Image (cartoon, rainbow over all chains, first blue to last red; front, side, top):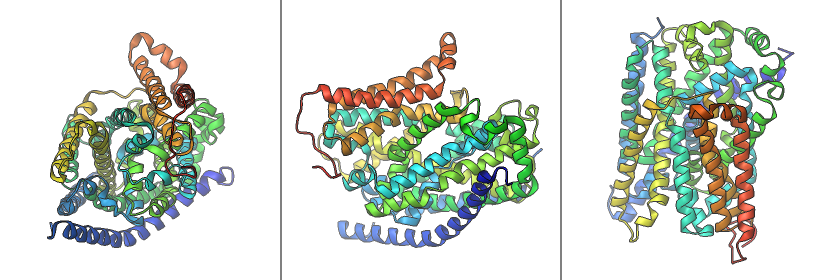
Length: 52
Length: 495
């Protein structure tokens, strides 16, 4: 472990960072999708006068 | 025999159903070509991170990075570290990508037209599509090989597995374009990440860190930990990967599509910064799987084909239940990559290659129909090319060489377009020609039996480095040869 500390640290960092970002993105991403679809729907209504 | 059971099959089935429903449901929001190709520029930060990460990790990625781990040890993760650094630096500085996003274009060649004219735009579109399609042409076969090996299906089902997978992806991509791609990418990111993390933890616990490092030390010595002293890597490998990955960060169509789909430039740059460390994980996590195969399997088990070592290892190392999550994760990875590649390259064909044929403005309806037809055509190409093209040498190098066909010239054009006042159409044309000819020539002489020896003596790294250097030199010489004109700078500080 101490002999190849660089790769050990990098492997641990990958598992920890990836786990954290997955949970974070999973929660925040839902909000992003909802707001994106809401803006697109509003945009379609503005352009066409009716929802598509 | 593998550990794939009915329980695992059910997990995969539920995942596939959920993805298809989500992908098809958002089709009603597609009202314009801009919605279809770049999601109406409404993508926000976290969706962007999920989409970029899911797109840039396919089964093919998992296979070649695991092969890198098997063949080079931990040093095989070097391209991932280089990409992460490049991605972070570009995200922080906005180098090239800020003026690109500020220009409000849908593709990179569209930006080039503003500076170099319509012919350069068209030529850039052609090399982008040529390099991109050759690159993604092997995705399906590799994905099919992984599934067949891990699930223990008969090899005769490879083509069927490939076709079914492609059809599923094509249906929602054709209907919903980039919107479907983004929403399904989000689901796929979660499923893929859960599978990748669980399997990696399982390997680290069951095989053990010391077993992994001992196997690498036994097979490759110090070279397994340091790319500069590895006999098959050395500085040419590292330098080629610096050029390749920096160019990919700046111009790879699927990456740039996220920047252009972002709701503003600041969001696009945050997506770059937020995703940068994922590129280390992208190489190191499957690399660890490949090293685990190196530590536990004898080459006879997978017939000496190092590409098959990792899936062969997983087929027996992953228990029932987790196997279903793994296969769903890999399907998720493959589907997100295929759909994204199909839509982004379709975007270049429609926006840039077909531009001269749109003398009058097409209606949005007609534009969307054409885009759907192009996506379907790319699907057919993928199916047939994937069936007959045999990959020679290691997969990462094949992808690097085919990607270089356009990455070398497009990166040079983008840098010059944004920051060099003297750059012009002569230099751009020369850079495109040199950047494409060198890797294409290398691929041809590698395939022809009488010239195979020459290709082996040159090697892919030197030919790759030459492509970037010659493309850069061609841009400078070609531009200086043309009489001075009024050359605009797009964005940047000069105008």
